[in-house]
Image 1 (cartoon, rainbow, N blue to C red):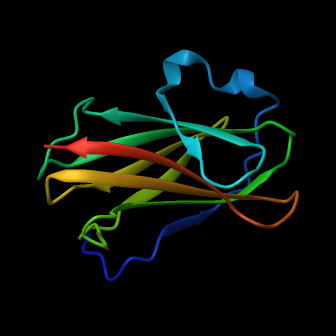
Image 2 (cartoon, one colour):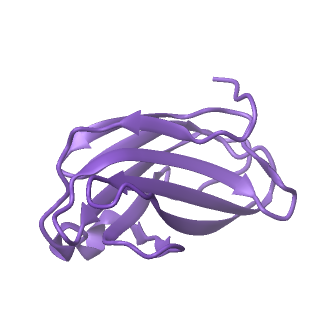
Length: 138
């Protein structure tokens, strides 16, 4: 799908967050760094495992709330901070259950450093928590 602007992708979710940090075992992917404080932990797994310029890929997202807060809204976006732009395509996201989601339709059109940002909003506070993961794409 063609993307218009840098707006994030959002999906209202009714799935409850996981009970503890045990929802992110080592085999779920690469942990994301929290850029704002909050009770959420997340990890990403890419398919194919190596992301290449001009090749579509899928991201499996694992999310849990460490304080048992319910996750209400999840959005994901990617951008190149050095170039101040995002992707040309808008991915679609779907819940797989148990704190797992799948984002399809990612494609990085330029080589360089990309930053993936996950925004998670729960019922315990209403403000989103942001997590990021940087990738060097060639």
